[in-house]
Length: 151
Image (cartoon, rainbow, N blue to C red; front, side, top):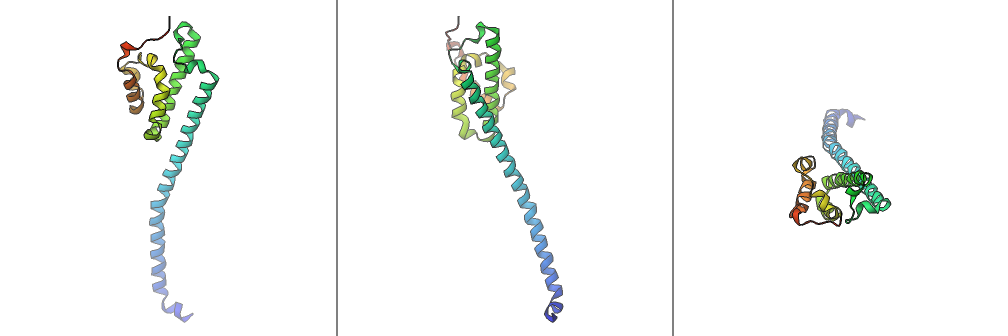
């Protein structure tokens, strides 16, 4: 007990230093943990959005078909536009998280809709994220060469 009394000041100083180090560690690690948790949550949400897009594609394969002619029927036209809008929204979500991993997948999903995307103007493009707008712009090259089987 006498040892503690003699070294109480040093022990107190060590305790203070340890508390300061713990506070610094918490100040560094807590934001990192929050950021990691946020990223995990966003990744899960993006996967869910993509999964829902695939479900729609399975349930309504005619909307995904490149030979689709939605303009012949107003209901089909609205359904097709909503489908492509959801595809673009899905693209924004997944590309925002991991462009390298999703770019080819998104490009492959957009490609069958090239004829429709060729009708997009700069106002439509301005509403998209840069990554999605770049993919759509790449599909819009030589739009005059795009043909459809639509009447």
